[in-house]
Image (cartoon, rainbow, N blue to C red; front, side, top):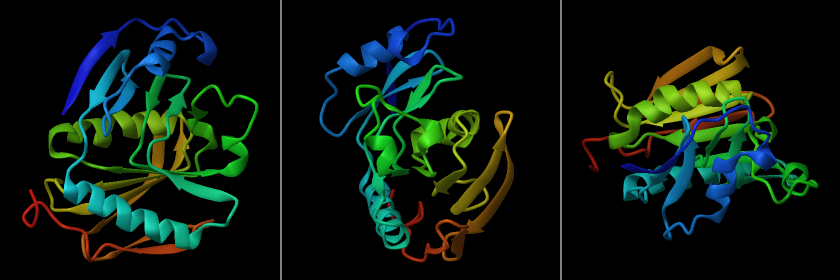
Length: 203
């Protein structure tokens, strides 16, 4: 579930002059909630469910085993999509230490610094992750977008989107829950999804 708390019309603001971004930085967000800027609105996202957190923990653990010590996995990190004026807080993002420690530490990271983003679809906000954020991450030049979808119409699945160009991902691969999802170099990871709970197991 999401709630719109503020909206405005963006006019090509730079990150440090964007009024929505300034408002986002000043929000007092309740513990466990997330605030994002989507299509010109600040939206509050309610805390995720237990199955959602379970999957996030499994994916995070697998990623941590596959990345070098100079990268890390974050769960509450805002990513700017400067070309759209949006800001997302993905369920997981892999980003290098150098991007976290650069001179712009007072601003959220640029999506261009991310190496991989993971979103786990919630029942009430599926279109946001499947369409809005898919387009946003492609515009932000995030090289790999992993979408874990318990609620997909064709059955629970994991889709990896690759090769962003002109606001679209040129390739994607989908596997059902229970199969392994292959993440290419520099990860070289076969993500085991056999423990992922589908919509029938946990609501």
